Image (tube, rainbow, N blue to C red):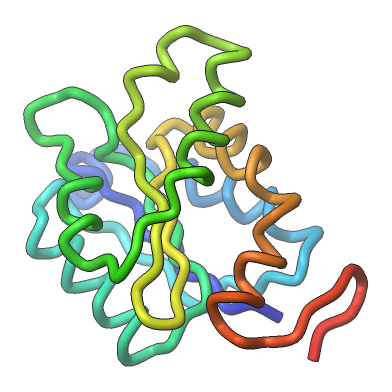
Length: 164
């Protein structure tokens, strides 16, 4: 199983003013695969806090996959991609492109998403949109390649229907 962290970036969610339903949509998409949600947190749109959680999960907790949601748009406080980029050892633009391409099939607004994908150490990090629908569709777009990508990043053996 690949260990996953879900980080919701939301000012209102972090203050308890909005229920975070996006993490539930993400969990729903993951439940059929070789994934175990090992961590979940909500932080405000503050780059130092975003970076703190990503660093903790990647460097100390050793999570295989870190999924952020929220903060990928054009609003002034949307800073998740910038915070993420500072922590990456390498970017994986094809995954972010695949997520946007899938979104564009549903709405032209997907072109406004600035989410990144990349690697820090042995963790794959994906920035998903903040809406449940956008996060679900983006994650579903990359789901077929995630286990293989994760096996390359983590060194954990994986093949369809089998994990070691």
